[in-house]
Image (tube, helix red, strand yellow):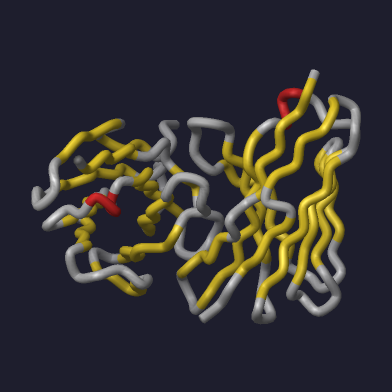
Length: 110
Length: 111
């Protein structure tokens, strides 16, 4: 079945440092979605990428979809304490199922 | 406009018992998906309901069943609870295959 792998599993940074998490799928994806889950919270949709090589920005967050549509990355510039949480990528499997990676837990030292 | 709501927020059960979790989708959404999230893991797809029918199922045993009502709300039932069923149960709603919006979840503890 489809597998979605994320690295690193954990990342601790000093406030102001950059952060990147990587996502790799075992199969080509029609799209990839990113979610953020704060500690004790639920996943919140951030963005969906559809096109090969697509790059989208949301303020300090930059999302990229690989040319082969099997990998993606999320980069945060100048992290802030509000960025703390687990970042998940997810890809569709079949028509309806979303397969999530295990996530990258980001902690930020003020 | 209320988002996705779930009840109860927390639940404690003992092994062998049965549990029913409830979900009301975001206004305008007709599709409900259920996920199980164990501690430190990503959400795992249980099943999806559309037009009151289950239309895809993940790798979960038949102890997990569900229902969708005409108003699009949904229930997740788990029978013969095991310790390993302890997790955060998330409901996500969408309009057809558009973006899924997650509810706050129900934290289930099985003792």
